[in-house]
Image (tube, rainbow, N blue to C red):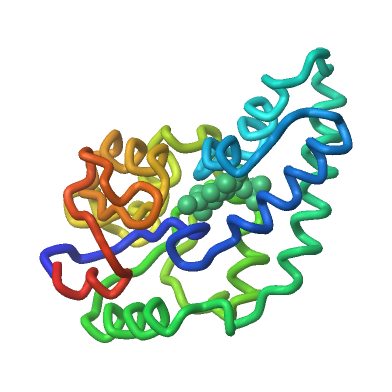
Length: 210
Ligand code: B16
Ligand code: MG
């Protein structure tokens, strides 16, 4: 690989928490009488919790105060975290597990760059708390994707400049963030065909061919 380090998005790249996000947001939207479906859910991928809530509330016929919004986000997160409790190391696919091990064996520095404030909990659930050389997540940043802050922070933590790192992303907002930070991006899943990405992955293990 021509890069010295790889920064991975978490949700949608290392593991899939999409369904749990959807179920938790859907329960909240139903309680509030706001229309919400899987199509609208796809707008939330890679976007911060409060920005996700704002997108959901766009379809509401009433306004919410900042205090109400904070409480609603907390309500969703409590349900989401209880669903995350179902996750285990079995939620890490063989493809992801073996590819991570192969990249590690090549001596690459490996980091997480996620918008999620639940990153430490998710990594613990899937058994990767101690695997990565650095973790930059929603707890330590001011600007969420598509701002490049989380990736710049991850690169800094592994001691590399953006031109020596590859970012792996499944969200258009994440591809945009990577490119804005001066990184090459390998897009997978939902964002696979994003024209801003340098690489388009069919499978996670395609990383080994770059
Ligand atoms: P939380 P990623 C993102 O994680 C998710 O894709 C996005 O759907 C979610 O709203 C965001 O994290 C915030 O998550 O509520 O757990 O802080 O894809 O950047 O790893
Ligand atoms: Mg993602």
